Figure 1 (tube, rainbow, N blue to C red):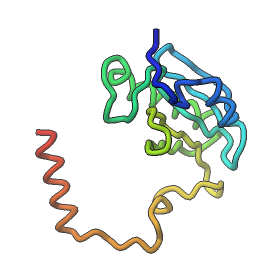
Figure 2: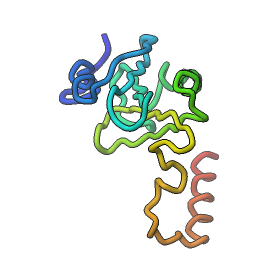
Figure 3: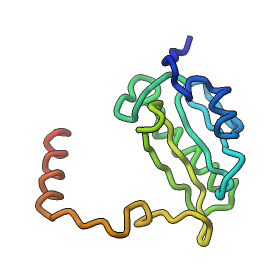
Figure 4: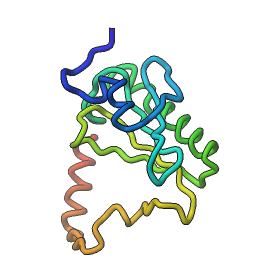
Length: 143
């Protein structure tokens, strides 16, 4: 039995499919891939685990062991099927606390901005010292 979190939209798969107007295109028992059928990007999809895992930082077990290979497989499939140059993978979690990767096939000139478009144009650069401090802290955490 796959654990569900009370009130989690993505644990209620049928409801999520209705809300996002999506259709399931692949499922391996741990991960499912659903393609959204509206909006400016053909092939925009959600990759999500069956089991309720709130955020990417909570990955463990079989989902953690298979995340990379599954992500590589489905992004390649989206790229090929959509005739795209690449597939963007975005993980945002504050609106729906159930891990999901938003996948967007991209071709030059489509609706996607990508790259620097993810940052406000008026955003001030962070001082180099802060970048260096965070890099050092990450190194320490991973050591």
